[in-house]
Length: 255
Image 1 (spheres, helix red, strand yellow):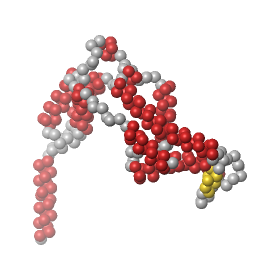
Image 2 (cartoon, helix red, strand yellow):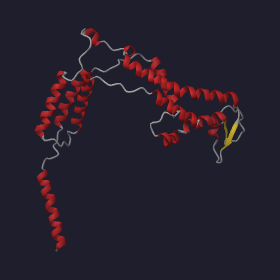
Image 3 (cartoon, rainbow, N blue to C red):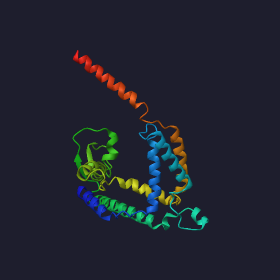
Image 4 (tube, rainbow, N blue to C red):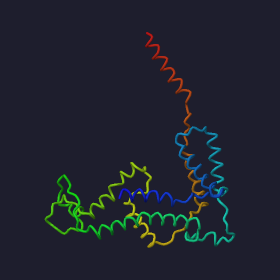
């Protein structure tokens, strides 16, 4: 299972497609949102002087409210522009979905093969005996495929040992391959649930309405401007007070 995990990790790395470059207009509208969020987060204790902060916040809010940073629509028809975008018709999203399907296949197929191999050749086998006592509640987890109510709980069946390794080797893979590895087989359970939920749910719009987000961000900038506090307020008095305390302490030491 360790060798399969290593193979799965490197195969997943080979299947990763190169990141596609975003258009300049799309990068611009994203960076405008990021600039506004950074400016808002610095307002409670801002190092920018009041005049510069007010001018920056006002100009950015005006540009966001007017849609100056929004990427121009490709369609001239307003009805088509307002309609939700089907992600299955977007080539960029289709490429991302195909990459996700390939990675999920690389993760699920080896586990299915190993589980079938264990069920065929090692069904009902006892592999190990744990060296410490356990309560009866662990019997269902440690003795799958063995229908013996009187067997000691410390005996572990082949299928149970497979599941223990499946969920327990993640720490070893993190030591060998790093935290962002693709060898963790326990992610298959979550990926199958996500795929089932996606199949049952409706198709959501592919991209958010950036014009509405920019207008909402302009309102947030106006709210953050009311919470602005300059970090340099009274800095001269604080420096002189601190300098005076240091001089007083030095004079006491000399005495």
